[in-house]
Structures are given as structure tokens and as C-alpha cells.
Length: 105
Image (cartoon, rainbow, N blue to C red; front, side, top):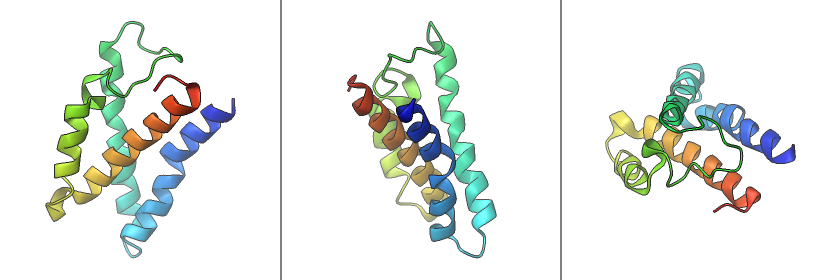
């Protein structure tokens, strides 16, 4: 229960802080972009079962693969993709933390 609370707080509340720190004047736009990076979880639809609370998504789903994470790191460099990269990497951090708390990473 507590890991679920941490997981979803990091997915929805922490991006609010990141958005404000990244762009205080346009934090609402930044927050929407960060929340938009949650679409990375669409790769869960390729798995069977779609949701498995015992499964670590890092290294399992295509958009959560180590190769994809490497691409997200490179997306930090161009300013145009930086906020999306921050959102994707924070998402991966959140999922990795969840894996650690579950003991599956």
C-alpha cells in the first residue's frame, strides 16, 4: 500500500514541483508536458498480463528498456526535448524505485 502511494505520488505530484522549478512562469505548460510523458506506459499494453504488480517494468517493457533510457539521456541535450527527457527519466526513476521497494530490481 505504501509503495503504491509513493509510486503514484512520484508520478503525479513530484512533476508539479519539477514543472515549477523548470519554468516558474509557465509551470502549467511544463506540468502538462511532464504528465504527457506518462504515455510511455502504453508499452504495458504489449505485455501479458497487461498489469502485473510483481513485475519490474524497467528492462521488461520496450519503452522502459535500458536502450530506451539511454535515448532519453541523449534527449536531455537539445533544449527542445529537454523537458520531455526530464519527464521520461523521472518516470524511469520512479519505476526503478518501485522495483527496488518491491525487491524485484
